[in-house]
Amino acid sequence: MAAPVYAELLAFSGRTEAFVDSFFSETHIVVEWEMDQAIWRTAGRVSKLRGAQQEAARLRSALPPSRLSNRRSRLCTEAIAS
Image 1 (cartoon, one colour):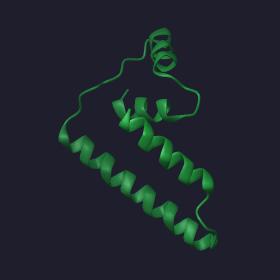
Image 2: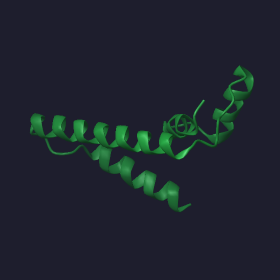
Image 3: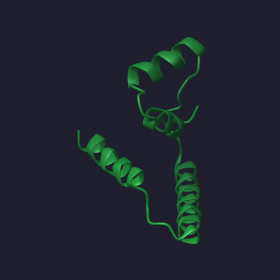
Image 4: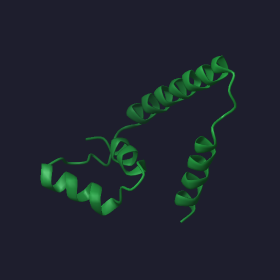
């Protein structure tokens, strides 16, 4: 499994590295920690497209960004800093 998938799974609320690692160990899933440049570039383009689609959907709904999104952004920033 690709390392970014590990990161996404870890991002879910309530999941710890120990939990995710234990799950992979028990299910014999191996994380591929190293990938070549082309894979990272593709992942970046897909992520950018997804973000643009989400922004377009938000604008179409004419609703302000949710507080949850702001809280998640703050939690991500705090997690990276620690």
